[in-house]
Length: 251
Ligand SMILES: Nc1ncnc2c1ncn2[C@@H]1O[C@H](COP(=O)(O)OP(=O)(O)OP(=O)(O)O)[C@@H](O)[C@H]1O
Ligand SMILES: [Mg+2]
Image 1 (cartoon, rainbow, N blue to C red):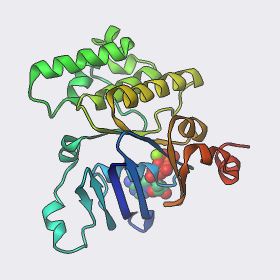
Image 2: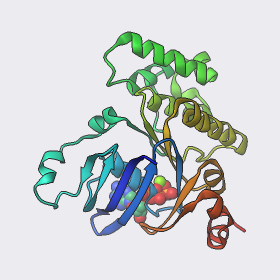
Image 3: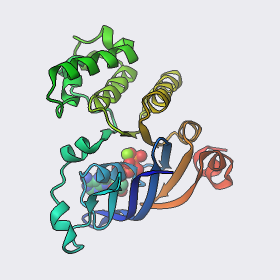
Image 4: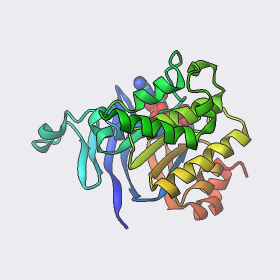
């Protein structure tokens, strides 16, 4: 299996708070991998670190065989890499759909999609990709001139995903796509995520508090507690795991 993303022994701190401690994990090309964990366990911090938004205290992150982030204190090699900014990481093929959707509320759907294509110079390619998004999410097609703030929560989540897909990523990072949405809407969104993975061959790294949905949607899962990975297994095994059932599935 081709390892697309490799996270090797990374730590991230906010002042005295150790948000991530020596986290190692990997995502294989073509897979859907999930990360579950309670509030404040460090899930969003991990995704931010992958796209270069939080500096590493230890460790490194490799995407498609190339180091994209490295701890600042680890000698020579870093000098070459320390300015790898989020837009450079996006241009390498990773797109983040941030927690809470963070759409540009005063912009229309179309303008939001244009923002997602900020690295694309070819106007025709942008038009083509927008049309592909309107075909994939018909509701966005019918609302393209509408201000984003007037969309429902589910529609905004779909727009946030579509915006990330405008950069034609090889891997998409999703931070709690189901947050605050009704079960039927969550099911819709997870169905789309599965199609993005299976039809467009986009590797998916999914962070969720909704452990049951996440484990059912994925092939492999990691469990995070207090900034550390405490379990890693096939998602089907984690669904049967007694500790997971008790702590995350409410059984
Ligand atoms: N910008 C920040 N400054 C200081 N502390 C932070 C910052 N961002 C996160 N933290 C702290 O780091 C820890 C991990 O936060 P993080 O947001 O990564 O957790 P999470 O697993 O995504 O939680 P949730 O499920 O609530 O989204 C928490 O203790 C949080 O309070
Ligand atoms: Mg979070």
